[in-house]
Each structure stands twice: as C-alpha cells, then as structure tokens.
Amino acid sequence: MTEVDPLSGQFNRLSEDIRRTPVEQLVSKAASGLYRAVKQARLVAANELAKDGAAEVSERRISEIGEAAWQSLTDAGPSYAAMMLTACHREVERRWGKAAATTLASLKLDFSRVCDAALALSSQPDANRINDVELVAGRDDDLDKGMYASLVRLGRELSSRPDR
Image 1 (cartoon, rainbow, N blue to C red):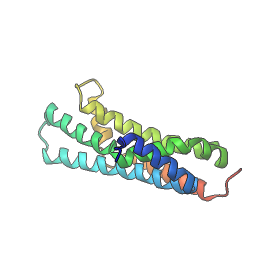
Image 2 (tube, rainbow, N blue to C red):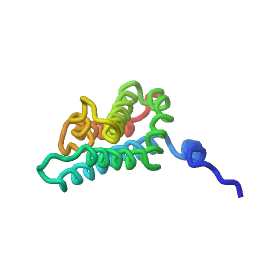
Image 3 (cartoon, rainbow, N blue to C red):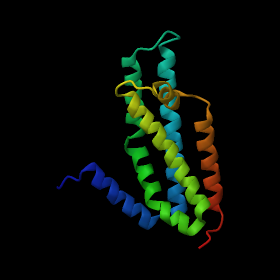
Image 4 (spheres, rainbow, N blue to C red):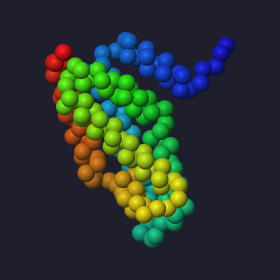
C-alpha cells in the first residue's frame, strides 16, 4: 500500500469536498472552524499566562506558550479550513459579490495575524513582543469581536441568494 504524504492527502480531500459539497456550506464550516481555532488557542494561551501569576513571565515561558498556540493554529483542522477558504474565495466573489469575498478575506487575515504573532512569540524577542502577546493571549478584544462580526456577516451573505 502506498503511503500518501499529509499535504497531498489534504489536497485530495479538498478536491473531493469541493466537488461534492455546496460552496456556501464549505465556506461556512471552514470560517467557523477558523474562528473556533483562534478562540481556543487564545483561551489556552491566556490561561497558561494566568497560571504564572502576576509576576513577570520569563521569555522562555512566553516562547513555549507562543509555540503551543502556533502548533494548535497550524494543526490539520485549522490548516485545512484556511486552505478551503482560499480555494473558495474566487467562487464566493463570483457568486455573492465583492462584499462577501472581502468579509472572507478579513477572517483569513485575522487568523493569519494570530498565527504570525504566535510564531513570533516562539522565536527571538522583538520590539512587537507585547503586541504579539496581546494578539495571542488577549481575551475580549477587538480581534475576537471583529472575527465574530465577520463570521456573522459572512453567514448572512452566504445565506442570501447568490448574485450569479
């Protein structure tokens, strides 16, 4: 039996899903998956920071928390959801218009920002360290509210009749 590498397996699965499932269902599921992944990774990171108490958290500990968040965000589920949204972007724009495509892009951008911040935390300290910690471990902030609003807006746009 021939072994398939994980990335090829994801591409095969992606192609199958796109052929069998309506685009609006794929996009809705993938978008909510990204939102849940970001929310979960940020909650875990915030709880890990809180365990260390009010005292200053070591750079090593921040790196570990960043690495754990990055790993959870780049796991198979969120990675597949991000690939699905990228694969469906043009179809969403063609059928539901630029507003729906822009909302979709906004969700993907917010997901990427958190991934980038988590990756940055897992590497060398830099001038944006505080901003990165806030993006990765923040609780109720504009990122979460913005992603949720985009998710609701996207669901509303996709449930309307496609333009084309």
